[in-house]
Image 1 (tube, helix red, strand yellow):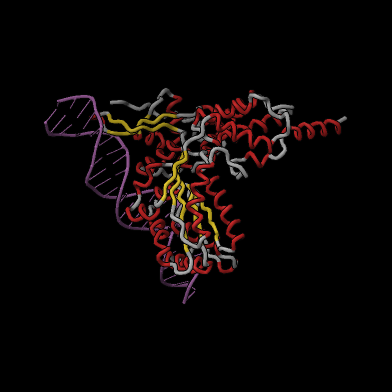
Image 2 (tube, rainbow, N blue to C red; image 1 turned 30 degrees about the vertical axis):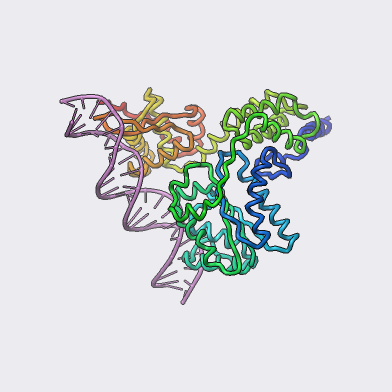
Length: 411
DNA sequence: TGTCCACTGGAAGGGAGGGCTT
DNA sequence: AAGCCCTCCCTTCCAGTGGACA
């Protein structure tokens, strides 16, 4: 009897998913619906690589989940294939600048992707920049072809480490004799070129493309396409795809979100041992995705950020919904003392508060109290209970979670 | 109309930590 | 082992500022 149950479970899970990989947003499908124009456009720029000329550098703009990365990778792959076919050397490197965000990191990563010999690789730290650059140039030169460099989330790179790397890279072509390099910069932020040096701006932005967000109908097409491959027949209720599309369209027209919704719905249905994915599963998925995101963010926060967040929560528990930077800092100092941690400077804490704001955990808006000075008003933008639960999984934070901040005296 | 508060946000720099080179 | 080099996390210093109030 027990055996039968085991098999039943296995069978019912098999009924839903055929190939889960396909609905991960990192998967690059054969067919990208509603991006024909963009693909053609990018291809027309890069075709010169096959003629042995240097393709223009390109900036691609668009919100998250508009297919920028997918299109860039797709065209890159096709280009490699065609290059092989025609005997032209083309290679491509993909770097996500949110992960690799230093000058050294970028150059060494590009270098290492071109270097085949393991013991010639550029170490991840230790070399002077100039040496890294020389090595990179030498290796690209050896290729005697075109190297396409894709820098995803390039705006993050510029805001963290400035545009020096981009200057170096854009200048590289003039140093190369037998080979060429061209750059695709992908950015979420339309205005990020404002931060660039004029020289970098003109040499990098020879071509610009803007990817519009998908609307609900287009999202449905994307989901249908993938669902065919990912799910078994009849695994989906008819209303599931339209609902996923509609919810994602409301957000930002974000295809990644739509795909995540569909996948997580499937996973939830699977766990429920349901025969079909239904609207209910999608609603649950919507909820789960947001909660998971927030608790993951909070769990992985550095200790001082956690202490700041705790300060905000503790104040809220005594009825202070809104804090100024100074007030938050006072409580923070008190609980640091209690936990035997040396507090950071207020300047540093102000930066951490900005980070928390950007992560969407708190709301911090700059306001002026006139003579009362200028500061930020901080409030929690996630659930107190859930947040506190996650924070308390950390022993240090747990030790201060009962603390009552002294009431702030407003003048 | 000017003052002046409580910060903000930029800049510079230190020092610890990774690791290479000689 | 001593001396470089790059990055990260912080501190210190400071000019700049929106707007209530005198």
